[in-house]
Length: 277
Image (tube, rainbow, N blue to C red):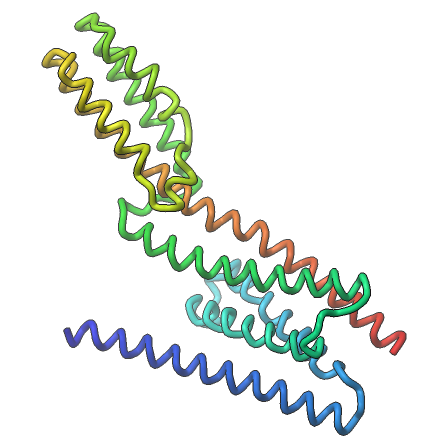
């Protein structure tokens, strides 16, 4: 119990420190913006530059992931800084726009891109936390890029079992079942949406059908059906890993391009503000 309580207390303590820092940073944004507007009478300039700096700093997390070998801090610490820095940036954005809907086409599009980046970031955090936890609970860890190759190997093993059955016994029952129910299952990734929502309906259905088929087989084909059942379960584990890891990777194809578009928009916005204000 003490070994469990120690890491748990450390986790809670780190979260309290991070939340406290985020709140203090948000208050600093409000106070500095208020003082700046009062002294200089230029609303939005300071918060705009704060926001610009925060977004640039947040973009550095992607660079940190690319150069993971350099001794520049743990990836987990960078991730926490990225999460809480994003929350501070979101708060600074609302302060910057005065807690109102921006007017003008460019400002509206620019604000929409910023909010989409923030929303996709929150979705990404939820996906990575939940899916990573689910991946560790089921099966062994598999590299995403190698999953299609493992699926091809399972299909070849299943076809070898089928050929052995047809060659030795001449029974058509197992062969017909394979081509009607298992051939498409082994052809590639399946049940993507079901795995995302934690549904095992496809696997259970195949298992029930194989249980019902067993009574029509002889002793040799029953043994081969047991081998096929193992391959089906293994294939379902690969489908599970492919679906969850694929979702975690696909999220980046949304969040990263939006971030790049946001940086470009911020540069244009900065030039326009300083040129015409």
